[in-house]
Every structure is written in C-alpha cells, then in structure tokens.
Image 1: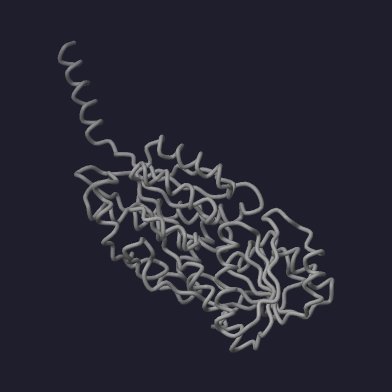
Image 2: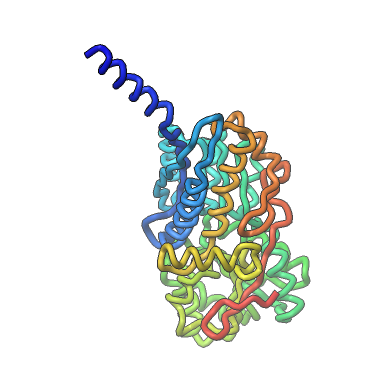
Length: 370
C-alpha cells in the first residue's frame, strides 16, 4: 500500500510539474449598449490572438504557458471603466488590452499604473492618454491630432471647404477630435462658423441642425460614434442640407453602413486611424481568418486588438517572464511585425509611424481616398 501511495504521489507531482501555467490577460470595452458592436469586434480580435499564441505551445520561464482572457464590460462609461480596471487588477491579470474608448481608457489607466500592469489600448485616440506620464500606458493606433491634421488638409485643399460647423458628443474622444479639427481647420484657412455640443446618447439633432443650416456651412464635422452619427446624417438629409458630413473613425464602421445605407453617399467623409485592411502587412489574411472564425466582417479595431495582445505576449517571451515588472522593459523596447504594421513604441507609449486614412462612401462601402 505504501508503494502504491508513493507511486500515486509521484504521478501527482509529475502532473503538477507538467501542468500549464495559466496566464490571465484582461480586456475591457463596451460589450453592451450602443457601442457593443465595436466592443465585441475588439474582443474577438483578442480571442484570435490568444488562440494563435496557445497553438504555439509557448514556454516562458521554463514552463509551458496557456493564456486565458478575462473580458469585462465597461459600457464605454468612465466610472464603470475604473471599477472594471480594479476588478481586472484584483483578478491577477498580467496585462490588459483596452480600453476601447478614450473616455474609459483615460481614467482606467491610473488604476493600471498604480498596479504596475501594462495596458495597451487598440483604439483610444485622445492625445491625453499618453500625456499623463504613465509608464504602463501604450497604444497601437494613431491619435486625434494626426486625424485632425489629415481631415483639415483634405477638406480645405481637395473639397474646398471654407466654412465648417462642428458638433461633438462631449466624450473624451468626440471632444478631443473636434478640438483637433477646429484648430487645424483654422490653420488651414477655413472659418469655424459654429461649435455645438450634444451627448453620446442623443438621437434628436433637429434644433442644432436648424441653427447650423441658417449659417450655410460647406461642411459639418461631427466628433462622435456611429450610434449618433446615423440619426444625425438622416436629419441632415431631412432638412435638405447640402453640407458635407465629416467625421472620424467613430463613423467609419460597418455598423454605420448598416444603420444609414439609405442616407450615405459620397458627401460623407471620415478619417480612420490606421491603414486599409488590404494595405496592412497581414490584413487580407486576418480578415479572412476573422470572418471564418466569427462569421462577421471586421468592424474597426479587431486587427489592432490582435496586435496589442501579441505585443504583450511577445514582450513576455523576450523577457522570459510573465510578471509585469520584468517584461515591461521588453515592451518598451519592442520591435514587432504585426498584422497592422511594425509595432514600436516611443517614449510616451505611442506607436511610431502610425497611419491615418481618409474614406468616403462609394458603391456600398467605405472607400479610401487619401
């Protein structure tokens, strides 16, 4: 009996020794509410990256590792985001991909900084995110300042916009982008004839648009997301306004097409942080794999979520450790070829050489024009 017990004990010890080390990665984004399609798109990009990493049977620190995702719903709400961030920290995640929106990422980043856990946002474009001086904050996408320059230059030089009215939804993303556009429109010689505000839950813009219509703008710029962009566009059409509608990546989504197919035309332009899928080094293959796996097209940020996830995992491999304090220096020094391009961070945590593309609506799709 003693021999049997000893044998069983040895078998148990061997099983423990050979067991995978589970490494939790956190994710946070809007999984419910009007922006849930973007949050789910982002989450699926992370899931695809984790599946790819686990298929490689990676060994880190002398032990085979298996990555698991702890995904939280921040509802794109700043208060909920801080609660979610603390929950992920308490759960022992070794890194975070998120948050999706600027309004959520900025307050949550303080929680991760205090815990010493690296967080890479795949989609936060507010310049404020990386201006806080945090050592654990990164992003893999262009910021609003870059989008504002591109939109303003194209609008004034190519579209001959001289008078522009600006509306934003008062979120960190919408207001930040609108501020960047307003500043750069003035620099480019255009007149900002009105600055109006709404919120990220509004659906009735008639009062604002009626006021703007009297000022006869060449273009209206909207800083916000597709859930509000769709009724805004519809009401522009109802009022018979001929103004161009300009916006950022919040409107450059497949969901905007689904919601507004009857109202979209070539008078709508939007900038998207990043480059078209077919121009990304791994974009075509990623789109095919994504659709096969999730039976849906990429909405916006899935490839950036994939790269953010792989950046964390690659840094862990290079440092031969999953502990944040040990792999953080490797993350700062990272030089990785991703789906979206080369991932190299500057001193602030911004990705270097980030691209911005300008689109218009043509033949049922967002079509790059610059």
